[in-house]
Image: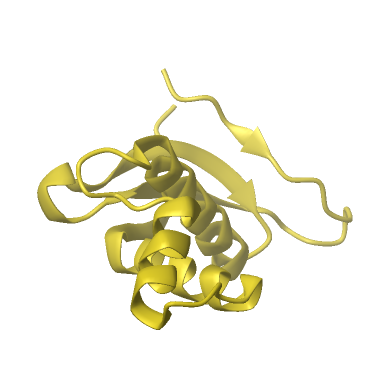
Length: 113
């Protein structure tokens, strides 16, 4: 059973509920329901969903063609025949991550009792 996550905000803000979907594309099945959270807005919920998808990616690093930072470092090293800068490794790694992850949110508009 999914656990609800509460993100603290000021009492003046009305929290909204969002269903979070995240996962990996390709043969991994795409985004799947993760949980329902309360967030101040859709952007906050999408940021959380993106983080969930990144964590899913990280759980597969080194398997099934999913590259780790070390793999990206080695690829860049082979391509340029010199040690790549950390910024270049991080940029290429995040491009790889973004090419695999998939996520979205749906606002919960009416709750069933």
